[in-house]
Image (tube, rainbow, N blue to C red; front, top):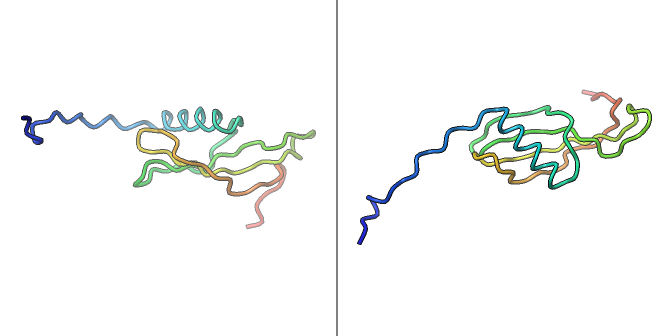
Amino acid sequence: MTDPKETTDTPDEPALTAPQVLRAAHEQFAELTGRSPEGVSRFERTEEGWLLEAEVVEVARVPETMSVMALYEVTLDPRGLLTGYRRVRRYERGRTDSR
């Protein structure tokens, strides 16, 4: 019988770098939604893993300044696996915040 204290613990995985997290988020988000993020406007480490906001073209129009953009909040666990996403807002590319 094996003593539970003697089981081999796997060492902690090395922390992901910011570029690794961003690449993982980009690839997984694109695979799930069919849309490729154009930029990231928020990126931070949280107790649960990672949080970022990605800007995505939802409706491409000509001229580009009339395209409909969306801001998505994307969450990943500490290993860089996407745990969820939600659209925060939509806006025309050429518009600025009124804040």
